[in-house]
Picture (tube, rainbow, N blue to C red):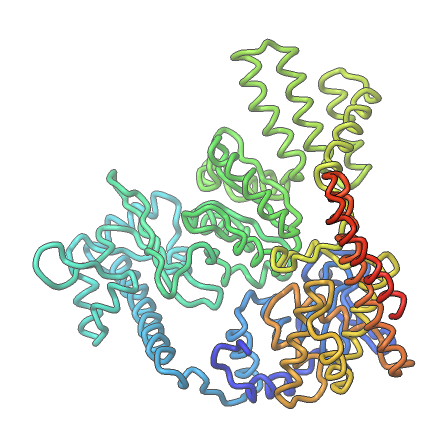
Length: 616
Ligand SMILES: [Zn+2]
């Protein structure tokens, strides 16, 4: 199975050494409830606890958002780690010796290179910082930073540095320390000399901002020119250490505050995040010269309940905020927007008005995302109104777009709230607006039916927690049968063997078929039933979520071969029904086409199928 090259024994040891209750308790306050413990889910926002930990099975599952898995999965989700990173972290904590990276050869090579690069980045950051603080070359840069409101304390905290204008300051520094220039080029610190051979520094005559990963290791730089010239901002290119669509600047600094406040303030640029920190916003992070990605959004979702966007006040900034809202909401983040007046950016606002107004009047006064969307629409329609349409036409257009935004709200109270202010602002009667809204919502439901949980294309909804399993009573018989059967199979290897023979991969729900396949594979390695261990083999959020949910089904009572055969029959029956329906469609089609022979042939098949089903 796919663990990279992490030995099974290491995964076993890690799961054995870390009780799920201890692991989760570090992040979630748990209270006893029967055999289980419950608490408020750290992965979605809730007021009554639906996050459940089962010590006997060593797993957790949230009935609110569907998050679930074992200790390793929990650490992955809450810390934003990959599977190997989570295993490593847990192994280190329990003092379990491991050496899996030594096994295959390429891995060792790449790992070695990474270690070298981490070293190079750490040294370079220190070197640039030293040059800024202590060298003659650094003096203008120091003056520039001070004039821009950077205190010495802030410069030290963020290890801001300076790359001098000479060609090879860093080259000389690192080569003297035996670092391989070719690797340094690959790692984004050097570039090839244009004429002749050898290397030169990639960053020259720039103020240098180290960029840290979530673990606090320097993995890249942002370099800023002081004077005119292009490009003004330059970042390290993508390397084996730096993936800008995943890194959030300042995340390692902000982590403690984020955990405490369950809130992240998101900025567009690293300078904003630094200045905001200085102004007292200790939970600020920034993207690195790139649009917000789904990976960023998920990382934030896993660490906080809500995100406050604080982008530039100009048109480009507001348009970017609108895009980011959609991405954040698609992964289930609660969002609001801190709006900066007069087209300023956060740094400019802090310089002009000071720290307290920034935290109190901008960050703490962030408006709900719906309100932001409406304001944004109003602004753009106002422009249209003036330019082309005349006032009434412009207002009507605005109201129509606004109703679409309001229609998306799940809460009737919120919808009413926004309708009322729309009615007040534009002098339309509330009743008329309500009627219009009703029509818009009806239209929307046609496009995307609400409450349709029988989505079986699990690989399309990977990690999408909003697809929550519906209450068992609402599901068709075959669906329940598949779930109950899987629950028993997870506890009894003999049952799994039996089902493998009788049913194989013939589960109707695709996720269930996948879970069964993984279970057969798990037992074929000679393993004993162990839900937590089995879940470690899945490495797919959707599968883990459904597996942890199913394993919560109490399957120890009243199991006998009769019950199991009944489930298998129900599952097969549904497959037959599908086949039957398809035949009936074909028969109708043949009738329409006047193909009597074909129709007769299909009728025979239908009769045979029906007979078979009666015998089942
Ligand atoms: Zn949850």
